[in-house]
Image (cartoon, rainbow, N blue to C red):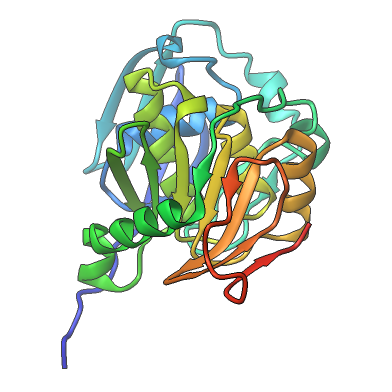
Length: 253
């Protein structure tokens, strides 16, 4: 029997300008990327320049962030919290109504479905923590030239925050990127992708009805069940050309 090690998760406290925000269950890899991605996704910063300093204390389980702008603590804590589903449970402060006010995606780039399936297969083969433990989620960005970067975490939304943080810190243009994820595309996952501006999201599993509705409204292409030679195309933004067998590809517009 090929025994795998257990996936790790740790309680990590996020502290912004001296104020404790929340405790998150995270895997101790790429924590700086996660901080940038989470703070951007939740509207604390608008770009990477919004953070003056980050200090990570793994022994104490704390991430200290110093923002360039003043942190309005009372206004923040007055917002309603929405707890995310799934492993590595987190919290978001955006409701579905808030997400509908995000800018709609206007990218005109198109991709062959076979290309997305190929990159999804490469993503799976290069997800080292998953291969070691069998219990990790991953998120991956595919750049214009095919370059892939992967981030992994016990929580699917944490993995997406990590990859957004990576892209943000590198200044990558979202309209030229594809986001691939191992996790279910729920409304909070869709909101993170929409906030950054990804035009195409692909997952190895399903998208929820609420996520698909938001994706259609924001003009984001969502493809689920990217496995082998099959897929489920949930939206009709015109960014994915189906060059595969019609018997294996389902379109649910």
